[in-house]
Figure (cartoon, one colour):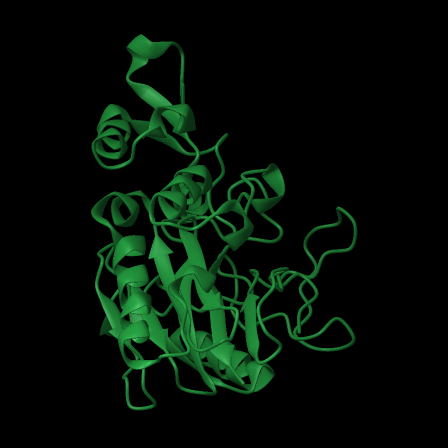
Amino acid sequence: MNPDWLIPNWPAPPHVKAVFTSRGIVQTGFETGRVSKSGRNGYSGASQPPFEAFNLGDHVGDDPNHVMANRHMLQVLLGVKPIYLKQVHGTAVVTLTPKTPHGTVADACITTEKKLACTIMVADCLPVLFTDAEGSFVAAAHAGWRGLTDGVLRQNIESINAIAVVNVDYVANKIIAWMGPCIGPEAFEVGGEVKAAFAASLPNSAAMFKPVGGPESGKWLADLAGLARLQLKQLGLGNDQIFGNDSSTAWCTVNNPLRFFSHRRDAVKFGSSGRMAGCIWIE
């Protein structure tokens, strides 16, 4: 696989696999401008600028043939079938089966099926992947600020907890979560309405906002990953159950242009941005 792809470092059982793709530009130190579609560095991608190179979004204006080639290569590399949702910044959760069509409207998914990848596409929003100590399920959520305040993580965890009703071996407190890259706390400027929405739904969220130009400006820098971590804790997960994005610059989609797509960064110049994917599956 591409060396820039992220493999979660978390205590998932060996039969649960997960990956987060990058934009597909092969990096050598801080060099730029080199895109390799094959060779010793692995598959980089078919898409051309401004979607270079491994864009998986079919709704952003990229050549459909290039997107199809990238999606085909992802399936080949993973050895499983990713299911691509139509994400609408909502809270709907779909249970995936081999017959679930691409484009199903949902912002979270869950499955107990083998070789079927829960797949979430992002370009600044936060992908959150879930499993448990036994690997009895896999799940994923698309968590932008609207999804977080409306309860997409809560809905996903409620779907996970529903497994306990039919699976006596499942223990709810064994859920583990991995948060992937997203827009970082030095780049995510929001208005007062976003801060107010979190204040209404998430206690202690004020610490995740820093004023821009003083409190009177009405603008704030928000820590999206930090807000998601707070919400996961509110939903019952402990520190030892949450892994991945720690809100540092290395995880920021905006500030790592060689590695990550960013809608907020790229749409200003190009009108759109490519999409990366977080995938999790049971072998």
